[in-house]
Image 1 (cartoon, rainbow, N blue to C red):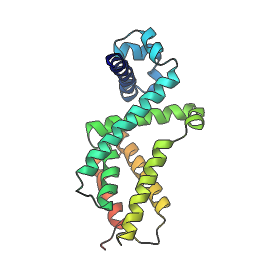
Image 2 (cartoon, helix red, strand yellow; image 1 turned 135 degrees about the horizontal axis):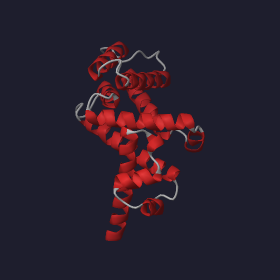
Image 3 (tube, rainbow, N blue to C red; image 1 turned 90 degrees about the vertical axis):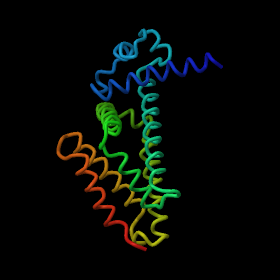
Image 4 (cartoon, rainbow, N blue to C red; image 1 turned 90 degrees about the horizontal axis):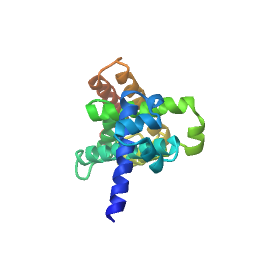
Length: 201
């Protein structure tokens, strides 16, 4: 059992090194050799745990997704017990916006992956977009619950609304990273749109 724990820790160490490079330099700089140097291990060890760069990229991406999910869980828990649909939607979308060091790191790293996919569309074709789809479905479920509670107009399409909210937050995140607006300004825009979407029962 101890050996298995050590192997997982080594894989985590290497994947985290790639995520740090993605955050600070972009994935174009994330060669296997560069990751080995960042992780403080040999190139041979990186190749042992991740035989190809693609496998390393996907493993690290899954870990990044887990980090984002944990952040969402914390924000949802802080929204109340049990949180109402608006509290959940607000928590999920707010925690994605790059308003603090952790969310900025996550947003920059995802942006590095998006840039990589633009240069190699086969990555999307082979692996799809499971996490964004799951997030949209989760938001859609909360929007339906809010409609049932009379908090959102029943005439609105939940799928389209969820997709639009997530697209807006992604765009706001890019505008923050690009220096167009501050994180607080992006949060104010999100709050404005949520105020328009939700209404008192």
